[in-house]
Each structure stands twice: as C-alpha cells, then as structure tokens.
Image 1: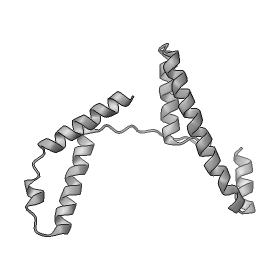
Image 2 (image 1 turned 90 degrees about the vertical axis):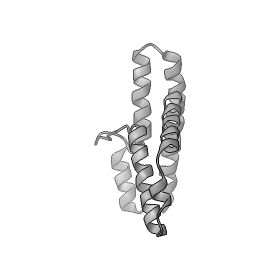
Image 3 (image 1 turned 135 degrees about the vertical axis):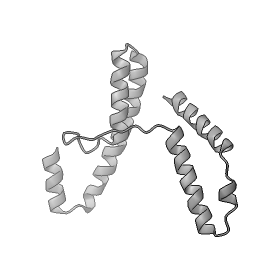
Image 4 (image 1 turned 60 degrees about the vertical axis):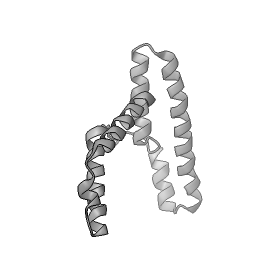
Length: 124
C-alpha cells in the first residue's frame, strides 16, 4: 500500500516538473496568480492521484472512520488471498486507530449534556 502511494507521489512530482507554469508566473495580480496556481495544482492532483471513495453506512459504529473502514476492507482482501501475516500486521494498526478514535470520543463525555449522554447510550 505504501509503495503505491509513493508511485503516485512520484508521478505527481514528475507532472509538476513538466507542467508549463509560464501563465501563472506571468500574472500581475497576486490573487489571480494564486487562484491560477491552485487551479493548476488541483488539476494535477486530480489527474495523477486516484481517489478512493469509502461510504459509511447507517450500521457502521461511530468509531469507524473512513480510514478504518478502508483498512478493514484491505485486511479482508489480504486474508482472502492467503496473506495472513500482512493482514495481521494491518489488524494491529486498525486496532490502534480504533483505540485512538474511541478514546477521543470518550474524552468528550465530561463536557456532554444529559441528552448527548443518552444518545451515546442508545448508540452502544
């Protein structure tokens, strides 16, 4: 997974190096130059780095973030393909992310109202 992201970064770096920035540098108004720069950079990102869409459903627990759900899907794929050791390594990372997410949500309980506490009780 890390090697894929590095290849996307390398591809983006290469595209940024080859991009013709002359119309951005030739501007006189700084706000227009900045807007052109952001538009060009956004387009380069869109063209060179893929986007993964992860949808959270109504049955997903509150501590399941899009990142955790994506990692769970990756772990399941690894397990199905027989790569148990890689799946177990990923499971450890997922567990630490879940613990971190739960501790952040539980740390807010001291400031919660009774209505929020009741809603939390129902969601468990």
